[in-house]
Length: 248
Image (cartoon, rainbow, N blue to C red; front, side, top):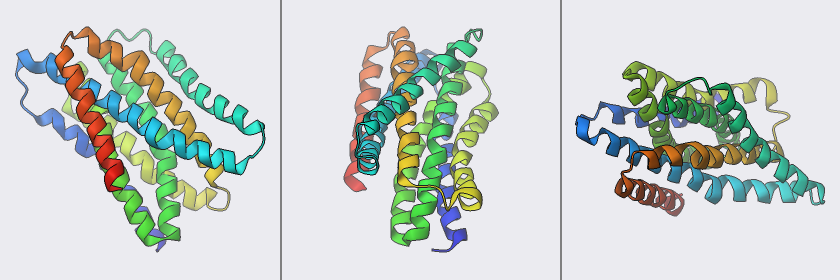
């Protein structure tokens, strides 16, 4: 596949994150806002943890074990994942002075997904260059899970700031990281990127997303005391992840 077509697939896949932000245009009544936020946070938890444990971690472990068949690989796996955990605590510490926990959640989600989307864009681009069919399948699969990821950014930021523009902008910044990763891969890294490097980054991302979900999102969702909507969000998120793997 041509360079332009490969970049286009990566761009469409990445920018689909913005589609998730359109949920903020739904007319939610004031007495249902807490239920809606609870549902969206719980849905995001299921998506982030689901992607991590069914996709990022197994794929990364397999590639690292194959690339470094020595005891060193276990240290690399542990350090990559733990670094992801550590980065959430560091960012959380830096944002401690921000009293609006919903806004903080949105920003943390955006940072986590920017880091996630960057290597994803590289993988999509490299896959498309190698095999057009593989690139299209990767692009569709990434679009499918980028939409709910957009929800996890847009909803907290919108309800924290009341600004649709800020919600969409932050979602866009997350999504544009994907084609940016593809462009940088083509310009600077096409001779150096390999499956080991991408696997280490994605394992790091898994640590970030699992920690963000458990340490930040879950307590916030519970604080609204809308337990039925926690269960509903988790169940629908899990079903989306299962459907994604069933189709792709």
